[in-house]
Image 1: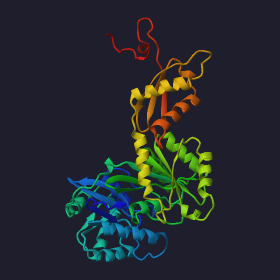
Image 2 (image 1 turned 90 degrees about the vertical axis):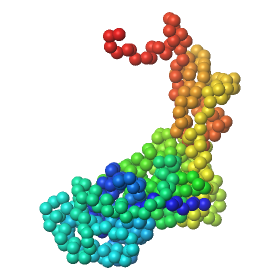
Image 3 (image 1 turned 45 degrees about the vertical axis):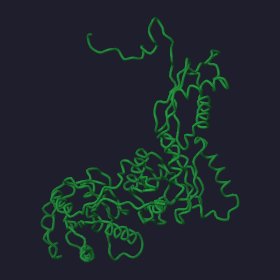
Image 4 (image 1 turned 180 degrees about the vertical axis):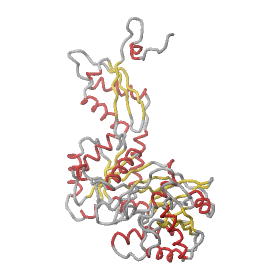
Amino acid sequence: MVEPLAPLPAIAILGRPNVGKSTFFNRIIGRRAAIVEDLPGVTRDRHYATTDWRGRSFRLIDTGGLDPEATTGMLALVRRQTEEAINEADVLICLFDGRDGLTPLDELIVEKLRKQSKPVFYAVNKTDTAGGRMLVNEFYRLGISPLYPISAEEGQGVAELLDEAAGRLPERAAPPQADDAPKIAILGRPNVGKSTLLNALTGEERAVVDSTPGTTRDTVDELVLHQGRPYLFVDTAGIRRRGKIDRGVERYSVARALDALERCDVALLVIDASEGIVDQETKLAGQVIDAGKGLVLLINKWDTKAGVPRAREAMESEIRRLFPFIPDPVVLYTSGLTKRGVNKIFGQLDRVLDGCRQRITTGQLNRLIRRLMAKQPPPTDRGRPVKLYYLTQGGVKPPTFVLFTNRPKGITPSYLRFIEHQLRAQYGFFGTPIRFLVRLRERESRGRPGWIKNLKPRQGND
């Protein structure tokens, strides 16, 4: 079962759409973590980051544009996400747009926040221009004081606001840190159920879920504790074929998703069981393997196959046919909607993570090589025998092996696959790619070891 985390104290950033919340969020954490675009409604999910100010660590929560009266559609889903952030946070910061002046929506938001017993700080953003500074006085009509004029873009006034807001945070013991947790990227095409899966893993409505493709735009990080072990799950935007990706927000979203792949330890590739496997998923799986990451194929929406005869056999046949480059793939059948099979994800993740980090001693590898040479020696190279001297492991994540031989060109890809199959049969390496480096081991020549010629010449006059 997923266990609740005792989180750090939190500050939530609130306001109507396009007042600069994500710019303010990025300014505080010191990096461009949230997508910023001069369009309303870019941020939809709650977006978290751990940061500190004047020695106080806390979680910062970016939210979508709030419309307190929205009851249907995407605005209502975003409103519920913002309300969850308000419930989680210990301190609230509400931003206004100094260039637009006071709006009826601002008044509705302030009316809603007046009912909160938590500290609320009000800031007028975009006051770095003469027009913005002139409109600050309008907001005093709301009867709130003090007002903090700031410019999130330029950083003006942000320190003074944070001094006050962070000073009202309660003291709490630090929870497990995301830096210590394995990072799991949830990848897939749009609308395959990635956000529903994240919500099932966390046990709460952590991400906006809607049938409209492209609902998730930014990556959503969530730390989950399972049997005392933390896991950092990263929900990503759906990745369409390159030619289908629109400019603007979607391009940023896809870039963030691919960046999440580069940062992760294991990728959960989510496939919609009701639609079957498509070309885009084989390409995404190839990208995961090329990046050297662990991979779990997660066949989601499996509840739609209830009552279908031989559904699993048919899916397994498709996996073998369309993913021939994944030896012994790790496959799970789940339903994020009904939560069927979700708890099995953690056991399979541990299995793949162990494979990514596994080390085999050189002695064990050389005993394996001797058995392979006796069982099936490599083919000759232009009529000359190919000898395998020894095999050693050069690294992990992914496991990388260095094979020393007298004729590197004689080691064919098919023979490397043979060695890989034997390694997997004996040591597992479930769900992780294996890489090989083939190196020449020359005998001593002219009184010098062969490797000396590969050294760079000494620079200088000595």
